[in-house]
Image (cartoon, rainbow, N blue to C red):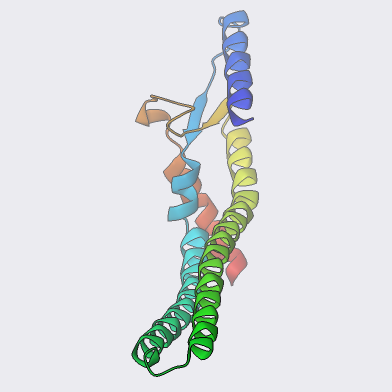
Length: 177
């Protein structure tokens, strides 16, 4: 989807430039969105809060892991003294807890990835209008998103990322107060 959108935008830009090449001057720029998200004040604040949530999840997972390891050690030490039926029951419980732990780890990873995507999208919802407004105010014909797949090379002279971060940070800090 992104590839088609970029290709369409690129073809449109080429078409505009080729059909009206003498009619007016075109102003192009790009923004490294990922950099803007990560390095902006909103991105940093969001990531700090997100790291706290991750630490809480990790602590829960580590406690469960320690509990399972302790249960395994106890089972191993007591296995010779237990009857077969009691030993099998404890082994079943141990294996069930191990499976539950593995599911918990997997679910937590998925939860963290979804939360990160959600937080990133929230920042993008605020960042994109800032980019659009900047483009309109400064007479840009097109502002591209720079990443390795869309733009393989572009001069640093048309990199708007730092300007956009500064504007976005000013808006964020103003709204934060």
